[in-house]
Every structure is written in C-alpha cells, then in structure tokens.
Length: 53
Image (tube, rainbow, N blue to C red; front, top):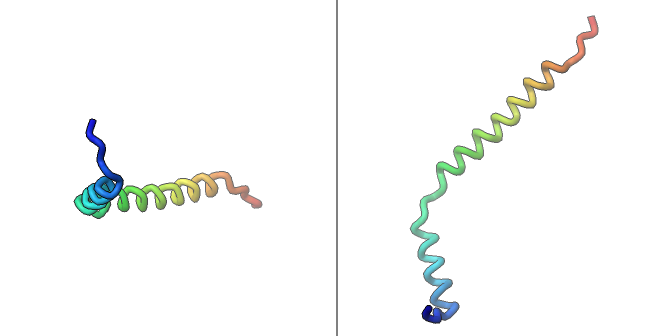
C-alpha cells in the first residue's frame, strides 16, 4: 500500500464531498419522520384523554 500524504488525502476527501448531492432525499425523509412522530404522539395522547362528562 502506498503512503499518501495527509494533505493529498484531505484534498481528495474535500473533492469527493463536493461530488455528493445536496442531500435532498435525506432532508425530506427527516422532515416526514419529524411530522410523523408529532402526528403519532398527538393521536396517542388524544386517545388517552380522560372525558369528564
């Protein structure tokens, strides 16, 4: 295995990071998951509410 200087490795890592996408899919998945958790919590808490009739 050839020895790669640290500066070359950092430059290659930075150029590879630029080639990656903007992460739109991950952003959408996280937003949907966040709102899904809120909706689930609201439904569960609404079902356990005591009725004082």
